[in-house]
Length: 333
Image (tube, rainbow, N blue to C red; front, side, top):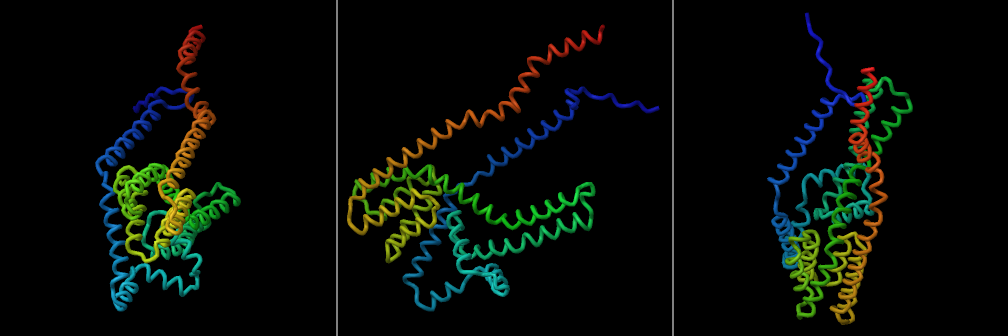
C-alpha cells in the first residue's frame, strides 16, 4: 500500500518549497557566474597594444613599401570575407553606400577590420532564411503550437523573420552605444589633460599619445582612440584626415566639436589650450546636467518596482501574522 506524499506548505496557493528551490538554483547560478567573471578577468591593454601596433605597421607599409608590395598588401585579405563578398556580388546585393555604412558602424563599435562589413551584410541575408525556415516548419509542418490561433502563428513567424533580419544591426547598435557612453564619460578628463599638455609645450601628436597613456586604464576605449589618432598624426601626410578619422570612429557630437577645434587650430594657428579649456568646461557641465536629469527621473522609475516587489513583501510581513491568527481563531470555532 503506497502512501501519498505529504503536500508541502503553500502561501497564496504557491508551493513554498518549490519557490525556495528555484530561488536557490538562481542564486547558485549567479554565484558561479560571479566566480567565473572574477577568475577570467583579462587585461585589455594587451589587445589594445596589439591593434595599435598593427595599425602603425599598416601606415608604415603604406608609406615606405614599394608599389608591388602595396598591391600584395591590398590583395592579401581575409579569405572568408573574400568568399562572402564574392557570393554577395554574384547575387548583386552589394551597394557601395551600404558597405560604407556597415564599415563606419564597425569602426564606431571598435572593430577595426573593414572586411567584417561583408559578413554583417551576409548575416542579414542568411539569418532570416535559417530561422525563418525553422520556425515555419515547426509552426505549420510540425504543429509546435496546436492551441494557437492562425493570427498568433503568423505573428510568431513575422516577429522571427523581423528580429533575425535586424539582429546584426541591433548587435552593432548595442556595441556602438556602450562604447560611445564609455567615451563620453572620459572626454572631459581627456580634454583637461590635453590642456595641460598643450600648456606644457607638447605637440599635438605627443599630447594625444600622453593622454592615451594616462587614461588607458580608466577609459580604455578613449585611450585606444587617442593613441590611434596619435599614430595617424605621425604617419599621414594630411593631418586633417587624422582628425576626421577620429570623428568618424566615434559617434559623438562632442568629439566632432573637439575635432573641429583641432582642425581650426592647425589651420589658423589659434591658441589650442584656451579653446580646449572652454570645451572641457562645457562637457563637464553637460555631464553634471545628465547626472541631475537621471537623479530627477529616479523617483518615477522606482515607483513600479516599489509597487510590484517592496509593498507586497511589506504587507505579507506586517499582515501575515494577523491573518494567520484570525484564520486559526475562525477554524477553532
